[in-house]
Length: 57
Image 1 (cartoon, rainbow, N blue to C red):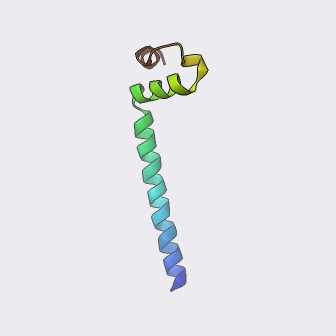
Image 2: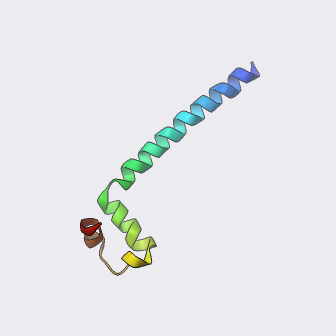
């Protein structure tokens, strides 16, 4: 019985990870969000505005 529980947990965890991955990809596909991350975390894009980064990159 324990093997079935471990297998069930592993299958559930794999599904959860796939859903998380899909949600992150959808979030980063939004140009405004991605441009804000670029501006706030990458020095090369810090001098540009969020809208400018979204339009150019």
